[in-house]
Length: 141
Image (cartoon, rainbow, N blue to C red; front, side):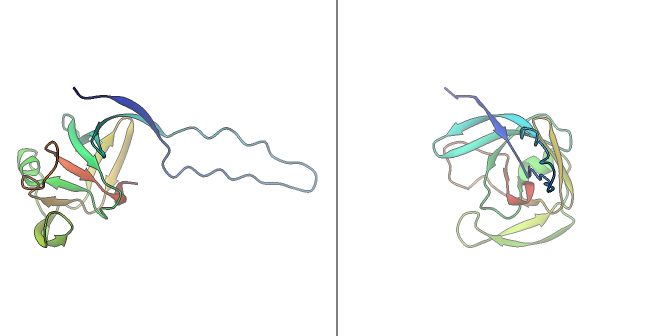
């Protein structure tokens, strides 16, 4: 059974207040940018993501990954092609082949963001409790 919970995702919200010698500006309460549904799996957090307007995909939230990653099979299915190729470390053991998808649009809840260098990697052999369609990396934040 998968548990679904709502979390408030307050991304890059900063409150600035100006003060003068005569008055102090009242600051408005900080509100989250968006609330999203997520699925906890062990110590991992999976979130539903739309890639370039696709139907929902399950991406693992991984702020330790510098780039967001799209599974190779998902990229092929959605016609997301690599603009260039190279390799990266951190997915499995050693270096793995990775394509650079260029700019993609990721939608999480009501939050829409453009990620400049999403990577395309074969995630089918990455060990995990459930399969994933991709990773939301630090660049997403």
